[in-house]
Length: 160
Image (cartoon, rainbow, N blue to C red; front, side, top):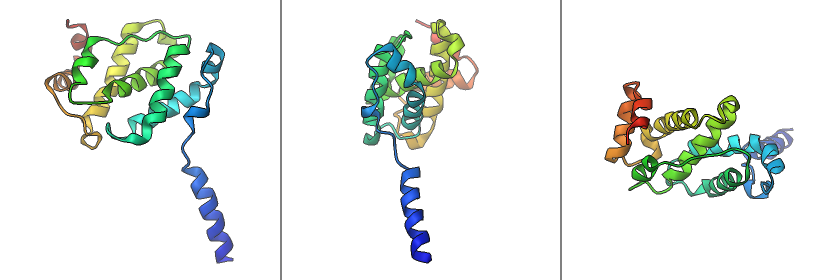
């Protein structure tokens, strides 16, 4: 009886913790992309749950980039993220995950690029503020985090 219970525990336990194979999900057409939206949120959540230097999220990052390229939505990448990326390899992928997650959780704001940017940077602030994520707090990252803490993230976004 113990052996049978242990076998089932191992069998179902490994399935419960299995990660989605994002490379097997088609995202070539807008129809594919629409069907894949739940997996995009899953991929974004995975990326946001791992440290910046964690190699296990590469498939999720690639999946999101391809989805963003082929989906019906528009995304903008501003120069703020490129400045923050100095010393923070892969931070752009985290930002793209933040954009995707925010947009899909707030589809009613899909045409409001300002709302998407504000929501994405708010998620990014949460990510970079967690020391376990190994984000170098360069002056640009620190400025964003400070603006967010002061409730002035929108003003920071409006700065040139």
